[in-house]
Image (cartoon, rainbow, N blue to C red; front, side):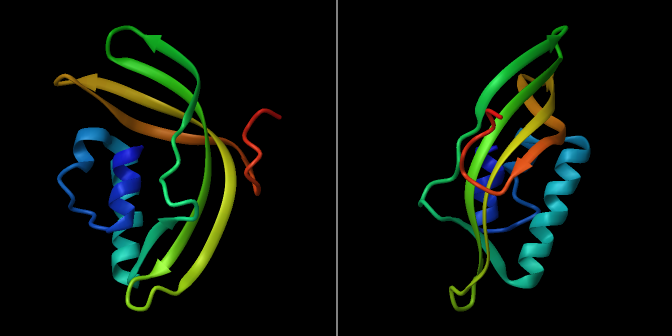
Length: 127
């Protein structure tokens, strides 16, 4: 998650760090989003200055190569026009997600992710 958030601050869908943390549909979707940001001349900034850190709620291991991780992410994300620094969109949200991870070549990568709940505030996911 930290890698994808860092790349969104300087969008580059070809960033070589991405395949180390994402794969499959998750990597494809992330590259599409980053390509859109780059095409539109925008980037992400975080309202409180730091990228959000997911709060892990549950981890289910399925054998040695698959894990499902449920987590909450509270973020204050700003979409900013790179040319002049103008905020074009501001979003505060709490979001519960479930990620499927796959382990290979010594790394865990996010293969897929789905949203379980979203709230338009920063109150977290304990609801």
